[in-house]
Length: 399
Image (cartoon, rainbow, N blue to C red; front, top):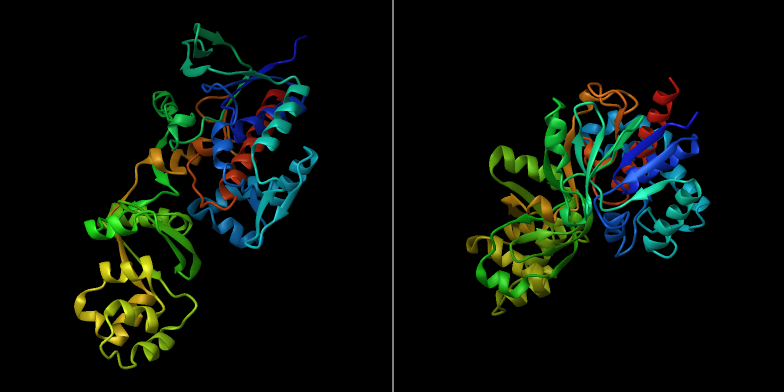
């Protein structure tokens, strides 16, 4: 008897992990993807240095997943940071831990890891079909695809959907699957930008002078890092870390006021003492540089956002330097975001990530309704849910 054919739709990390697990379980696996090659978003994400996972303790690691921490916990426990590093080492890729606790491949690039992974999948007889865009099901349940040579139909014994969220649509994650699943009565939360920049509404003078300037070191909510001033607002690591909170506040209140510490190396008391010294005939820029230690874009931010009346008050100025109120007025479009929130509700799937209303159809990765900051958390959850969906599909087929 022929082995059952399993179809995985989506050749990103979640889909490839599901395919690997299913192939290891003895199934014939066909992977379909609309893009010309596998892992395109994965490669782009690793262009500046692939952050694979993170080594922080379990409790704070889980907390990075916010409201979905508990529901993701079983998958992260089954295939967490240590397991991911061991898996990568089996592929022949060395890793190291950076000073921040982030885990990187020794070569810092995604391409060698992806090449080694695809070699393993081919050795397992996993078949990749590129330029095949999934369009849904026929009336009798067969999968339908658009290809450069026309439409095709494929009947699968089980299906894993790993089509990504809605960010970076040019690399394949365009969220087109939402209408297909919603049409089947599946509960799908709207896709929203996550790990994204925000519009502030700078003055023309500030925008022309400082767009593109990095602000470092700085801190938000006592977390230190950096961000970049853009022509419309702000983006970068520190901003991505608060993107979920800011996005939700904007939705509820119309604005999210984030307090930025421009001198995380100094206490407010130290700044008050320094700024209370006689200013003499020094200009505000000179006074800010010598007494407050701010120049360039940091000084520009103070001038842009602090009322003139507060500049002469040492306490008000010190307070602003330690907690400058930056009004975030709108998230940048989802097409510009690193990742997305929203997706298929966890209430619509079972513990094996199978859609309750569609037996034999499993989900993985960013199609599910969760989000996480950058720092290895996104990739970790994609790999963990990919593995879980592959195991779930294999178990379902065995039953």
